[in-house]
Length: 107
Image (cartoon, rainbow, N blue to C red):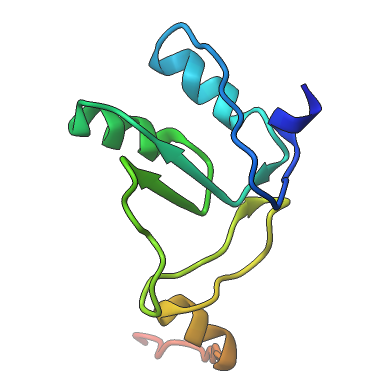
């Protein structure tokens, strides 16, 4: 369904049946967007393993809050480029320079 693949900003909950962790990850990643997600599980270690495979910029487990001034915020895929907040968010205000020179020859 379109609502399961779009990036909807509103009070929407999409629930899709799956046939195990691999199928759930496939479904979750089957979108051009990847801003945020949530996993609910009675097995925290399993939820962490699944979370590592889901392509979103932020992800909560069992209602865990991921947002804070020190936590980078931004999405994957078509859900944004770059990060806000945290060190990663501050880096956008810096300029990096690379300088190269020939190494000394051993004549």
